[in-house]
Length: 186
Image (cartoon, rainbow, N blue to C red; front, side, top):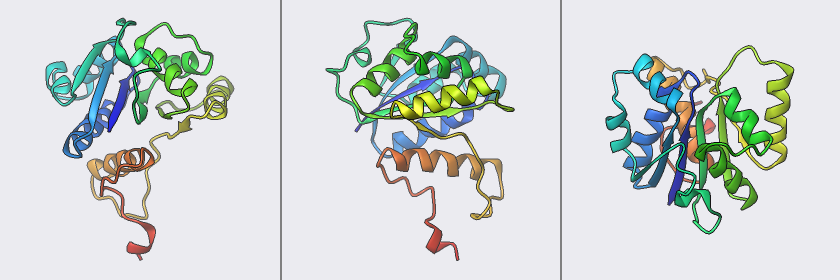
């Protein structure tokens, strides 16, 4: 399955790293776009280089590469995930302001009625943020903030990240095995 992964400049880039690792093991064809600020956060928050991150994807695009195949509805994918999703990127998606490849690909995903998952990473949330989340949800996106679950008894930060990543991958209709179903936990 072809999946677009947009990585914008919010904190939480480990979610994108883990998504890439998981999608790689599941043989998904990942089309990766990393914003300038996401690349900076990669350096701030991890020991990964941009080259290492890019090596986990089948295809990589510059966020200014507006003529990339993923900017067209004729390029069929199983959907797109934006993780983490900055409030700037969320606002641009909500209002159809396609000034970057990440936002254009999200716009195309919505107009083609394909799955779009956005993982907003901000707290606290203003009314503007909440309204933008409502707008993208009304347009057909799934809004999936990284909310930790504790019924699965996470022991590490990686367990918390794995749960959120597993839920995103499951929503793309790809079984990851990262999330135990409720009945198996009790």
